[in-house]
Image (cartoon, rainbow, N blue to C red; front, side, top):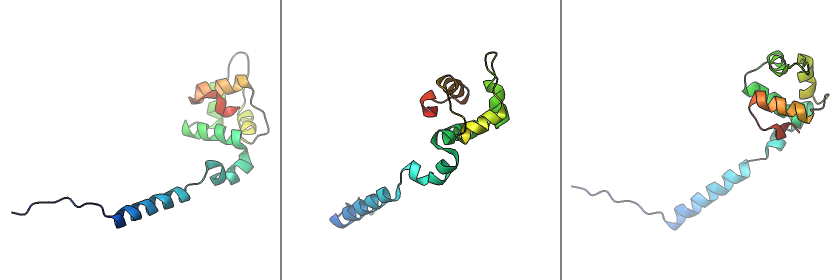
Length: 109
């Protein structure tokens, strides 16, 4: 009968593990740097609106319909203008978007 023995980590394997961890850290980059082409096209807040809308699997028209209330009418091109940074997002609209898209309203401000 053979007895299974557990192998211990030597100094060499510990060093190799430390090196691989440091390489992993160097490969990560901030999201703003990774998405700078998209940010230049949509703006940062617009990218948040677009990303949240796509995550909720809604079209601009469906989102506009969900945002419509008696006090304000939101058209699909308003959503497009918000995504491209041509229309500012008020605090009231940020709250509405957050409620419909199920995110924190502060990401839209």
